[in-house]
Image (cartoon, rainbow, N blue to C red; front, side, top):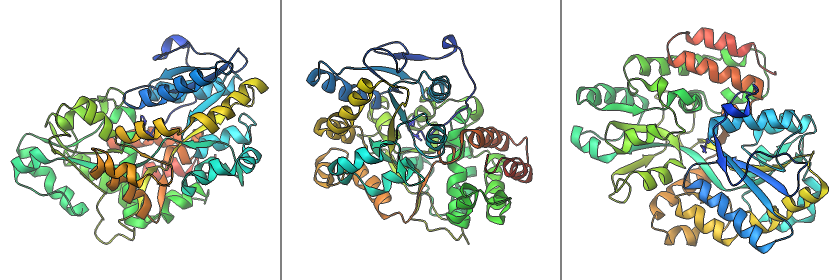
Length: 440
């Protein structure tokens, strides 16, 4: 999830249907290119402040390496997810492929579309040793490493607006029952209980990820990931699906949430302009609210917490979901020169000292070991330490579903989540539809 995302944006997450170039919303330092062209190419997500950090790393690398240049192109989150899959399938991928690892990376690896980096990491053990071990799970397919972990750990966080909580004279929720009890109180005050960019689909998914975990524990989705027959039929899954629809029916989300996009940051604006009381979103949201929300963050009006437990649930309330990191792969179609440039960027440019400082300045916690002193010195120290503690203390850091699953299953998942939130299908219909694509 940045994703945006950023799962991400994870966050995030999309179809593999082809789009014409005219249909894509893209911008950057160069137009879309292929791996076979001169110089290495690199596609990643746009949107500040994350885009600036990524571009800064490229610019510094290019300045130090005039003979090994990287050309960057940026895309909006949802457009990127479609474009990158189409380009890879057509053999026209950029040299460096930005992504979330997991099921999509597995598809690329199985098809021989990305480089096996296992031996490179063996030869560069210092690079691997400086990163959190948990970040390599989503980069590893059948015991081999196909991506370089990068950027920040991004757990999903429940944000709340302290100003409107004070106005309504209520406290942050400590349980699912508390959430349901807050809904009518905020609605009565003319404030939406929750902001949601429902048109982006993956934003809805975060609710199910937490409810599945809090009700049944990580084993519920693990059974789906492992391809167990009828894994979606577990009682805990049906319970979670039902609870989401109860929240929708109670007007728990902003009116018209299905037409609000996350790429536009309209969901973020609803929170910092006091039109919504709470929002479930990735840790990257903090930086967006800080840069776009005026004094909302600096005034101390933004609150944050882990998702609360569900009464009677089996899940550990310290567990989290989201993006354990972001990932850079190398296209197998790239030239040897381009591949060498990419590997040099991995060793010299990714998470250099300036990039680490820049991620921290955005409110992000880099996946690099030994950053506690830097986090403590930053103006966002409270949020950074909170994020670090969530990721550090979680017994399970579940990867975003649409990244953990194959692209085929992920697309069916996202479509059915939209229908679930729109109340056009029942929990049982959702289960039946998803059981049909297990293992595909």
